[in-house]
Length: 380
Ligand SMILES: *Cc1c(COP(=O)(O)O)cnc(C)c1O
Image 1 (cartoon, protein in one colour):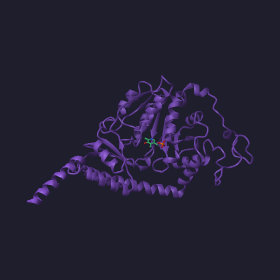
Image 2: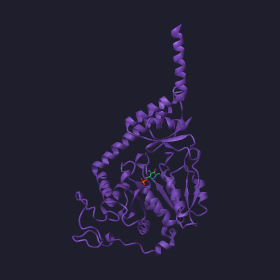
Image 3: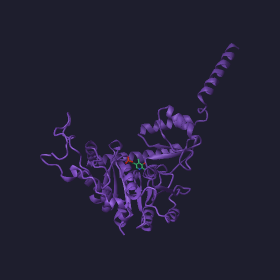
Image 4: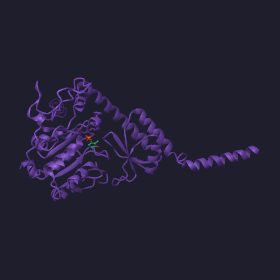
């Protein structure tokens, strides 16, 4: 059975929009897309008067090489967020189909399902925030179309071992797609699940240039999957998802020099992550730090709300994750530059010091009292 039989049947029948750029690639005289024949002022050779390629060939080839797959197995989109949305729209019929997520995890899977009118089934991670494989398999006895696994997981930082991903894909063959979101895999010890794609027709891997590649502002992500799944999603992706300047920025970043630069920065983040983890564990108000394979640390505090406010007052914004199940005492902190991390520790040290956490109004009152006492003793 082809994995496409899991997709919404009406999409197979849909005649996709055929854009001018799809019908004919660049030529000397282009009068087929109602574009301006002139570039805008200050264009600097970017040809911004022309629509971009729907799936820019050079970028697709480069990302395929980077991830070790064929070009036909790559769908480029506006961040991996767009691929999540396209997957849900392609496979889930509103009011009938379901996706499965394993909380606490990234919120976009459930949001996209909600927008599409698909049900969300939840199988929580176990007490150590590892995937509960047996519970997932048991819950999949009732059909789901997509199983989203986030590895390393946001916001807990743990990974799903590759053998578990393979086992799940085998068990769900012909029944569901297993989608592994690897937004943070460049920071991890374990390698990508992309190497499993040749063995599992029902596997998909999400990659992004937003994190390790430092291109969150360019909004470029990819789904790696079987060519037929990619072809199906191309039927519903908007005609020109990637703006030319973003594609150019990605091509520069993914060159040989850019790649080395990325690796150096990832090495710094990994070192800083360990340094921060050790320092955080020593702070009196810190209950613990979750083991992490990503570029953030999820930290349990005695009083997360106060710590959040102290940090914010000093101009340091972290992510409040206390709304997630079993993270009611946690803040998620991205690893920054060595300087930013030093500043973070400085503020946390002052903030978790029992002598320094006295609210300012009481502290002010006390110093006034001290002052008057000193005044009294001075009189004496
Ligand atoms: C940051 C993040 C992404 C990346 O989204 P983009 O749309 O590619 O910027 C995807 N998944 C998870 C879990 C993330 O944390």
